[in-house]
Image (spheres, rainbow, N blue to C red):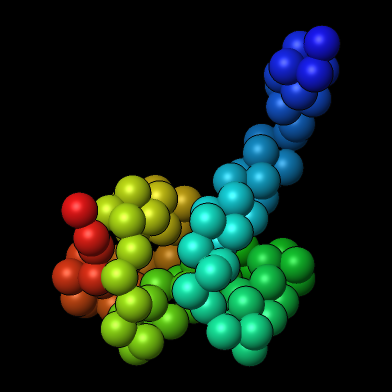
Length: 100
């Protein structure tokens, strides 16, 4: 029953809500490697209608903090910021921080 109700609720999301759900899920997936200040900075942007800017900030946090993240995380950052953030504004060496 939970699976059915979960699917129903996901299907009823607007495209914007679904996008925000994916953005928040991505941030949550790497939250263990973020400091409290880093989390606050990223969530502040997301919560104030700037989710793509929040992901761009996350990308810079990854690079400047020399963090290693799954390659899927970097791919998701690129996908979720496409058309919203100039790719030139993302760190040039972001891909170098992918593991696996």
